[in-house]
Length: 455
RNA sequence: GGCAGGGUGGCUCAGUGGUACGGCGGAGGACUGCAAAUCCUUUAUUCGCGAGUUCGAUUCUCGCCCCUGCCUCCA
Image 1 (cartoon, rainbow, N blue to C red):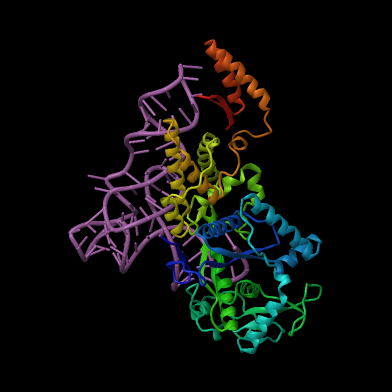
Image 2: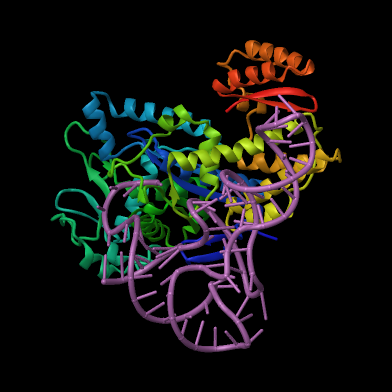
């Protein structure tokens, strides 16, 4: 049984066979660091975190690279508005990114290259494109890519050059030889961040950084390139055009794109203003809830964000944490992942299906424990699956019993109630339980005494 | 208009050429002093609509309707 992935390039699922046996090179487009990340960014990061984890689980040594775009018009504008330098802005946003994604249990990539630290690579690639006649210097001094000269342009996004042109409603930049051409190197205006280049002081265009940085870390041809659906065109299309033209051949072999997060069936985006930042959401919900929410839908499908959807994710986790609470004392043994789970993950990272396997095993654990049967193997598998998905990583205690509650008082009341129960004073016992229930505290009378949790 | 991806029970979310996974919710039951948690049973003659291929289609083909996204910066 082996991994099958949906390759946007071929628009179908393909067996995943890395270039070099046992090794995977994976590049994922990160974020432009001019603002805080929203739930859409969280989805993308979580999705590729799962890909990363699963590849490693499958025995691959993964060179995972994710960039930060830290030079860009929006960054310059935002920094100016805030009266800080662009590097101050990008530094603080990179830090915020790490805080948010760490909270969501996303593993850090092996490399997180920044555009501003890879100028030479980009300049070299642009030089190659100019030398090969694939790029030219415009009247305004910008270096532009000649899209028409690249055979196969549009393969990834399924667009034809003729259609692009006729459908183009944006104002045409007069300095371009062709409206389709895009900027490789942009001349700096006074006061803008700038780097020296053979074409004068300026900064790179958006697309070139990913071509240059991916190739520099992973080689000219590598296995996986990922990102949000919206990057397919033009960004990824342009990356392909640049890299293949410069390298004279290959580039990423498998293209993976995650679907959007929607609100009211509309894409969450900055421009629509209908976004929630991750930290905003995490104020009122546990990070694992957000992660669970993301994993509950296949990564290529649209994902509707709402309080209700988060609630569903939370309730699901409650169920799993109930199990975790029961199995805390069970010893750790080594065990293979259940077949159903492996099959699901191998089928283009089908996390909803994988979660179904988790629930099913959970039910079997409950059943076995109810019957006082051995559960070591099941528990080990359960733990392994959850850990791989990056859920159930808190203790059940922390999950159900927030530290801001006065545990001593609650437990005192429980003692009092149990005394009442023992003397069959159920009126008093229920009174205590109702008192706590009013505070959102649920009591559970189990075989081993009474436990409580916040609901 | 072009391209891409969708329309599955009250909600959500998988999936398959042989009448549909899981979660939430609902109903009934076991357990409990009563609950909670847990377990069991049950909850879609049916997978947008129509036609075709087939012994058989929700799954394949064609047409239609509807939704979303991309075509401009965007995870």
